[in-house]
Length: 287
Image (cartoon, rainbow, N blue to C red):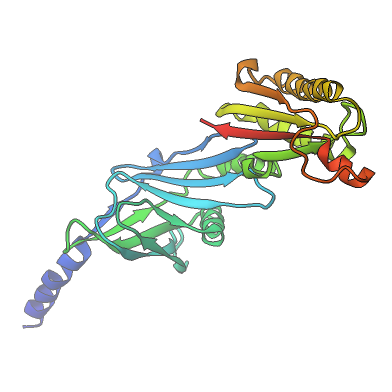
């Protein structure tokens, strides 16, 4: 009788365990790759066979940042919540699993996690744990899905990723997409602060091949004749253009306009306000 009960319990338990579909790379096949290695963006990628890719991305910015994206081959068909755990592999007997975060499942979108959870996943991988994401399958109501990140072959690429992140530019495209540079009086020499901003823009232009157009609009104050001021504004803009072409930006992607003493943004009644009118406005567009 006892044997019958045990056998019955085994039958009842089996479907529950079999209903979890596991996706993870085998230890011998686990690969981590550093993608988009530049001073604008660093991405660490891990392929999950039959499922998709796990992506950790950090971008150039004033502040350190990181985002985790679970790129799925089959996007969600409904909304839900996934549980993210750090799971010890079989060769860590006695180690306990740890809850990391909940991940929102959004219809027709990849999964993602914010900075804190993303760094936690990386640190757990560094220790040899397998962060795993559990959720109810949206295609089969009888199945749950477990998506594991294999820590094998992780550390070397993670250290390379960390070095890449350390070398990111300390500003983003949004910080320089619209910039106003000011000049010394009756000169095409920038003020000290504008030279610093111009160097920032130059550093960015060297790294970003997707910039479609750089527009340079130069202006002067009202001191001096109108023809002189117009020529001065053109000369100022051309100097910036030459600086950018020297950085490798194709000349045809830079448009220059000298406006002279037109379109003042401040009165010309004193030196402080006139300095605001001596300016070049730089606008940049991406492809």
